[in-house]
Length: 339
Image (cartoon, rainbow, N blue to C red; front, side, top):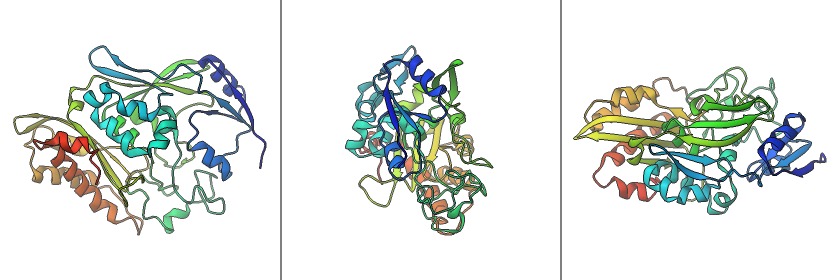
């Protein structure tokens, strides 16, 4: 095993400076994914810079009703924060459904957004994987791909993005704030996750040494009526086959505003903009839900074993919309929308 050096820093500027100056270094937060990748030699940095002492654990309201979450806030703390549960229930639910209690107590918000794909071929050094080794091919294209993506794919990669939280944040137009040697930056979260296209090894627009410092969720009255539906193979902790983050405002029986994003079916958290356009201003009926879901999934491309995901995603969108528009929607939200 390659030797790895370790250091611990206490302020953001030092952390950014140390990693930026060393191309062979990497930040270490909760480590719930990174340590696994180190153990199986998928990632082999020469130096780990522990950032857990940085003052980045805030969960604060912003003027107008928004939310700021520090990059090192633990998933469990954010999920249980009264502000999040009341104003942004879809965020709370996505966190509760996104990991076991033990992992939620360790994993950070920034680390959750930066986690690598869970594709088995990415973690198998004997298999071709363009994310791990550019130019080596994508074994999943003609391999075991039951859990892989049907949206946003390319001939280089069909791995799904694993984060549940990211799906909720994409639905709510969150902004990722970063710090680098060039100063502070703001990145709209839909731009923070890159499609694989011809360079699947590049998953984010961050430069080396650029650190997520906080996530901002703008004021979103629509988010107060929201939920996260996660469909998986087993009821206990598991990655999504399909997930739906939905927030909606109703004027009588008409949809006045809707935000919709999908997980488990795409190579990045997938904002369902076509479905949103078709749903805005129409009655909240199952027929309209179904038409919007079908339109959103028209570009989907299956690769054999994952063909079922297209129909499952359509049905999941309809089910999530039925749940969030029902009179007792809070009861569904209270259970985390699991299915």
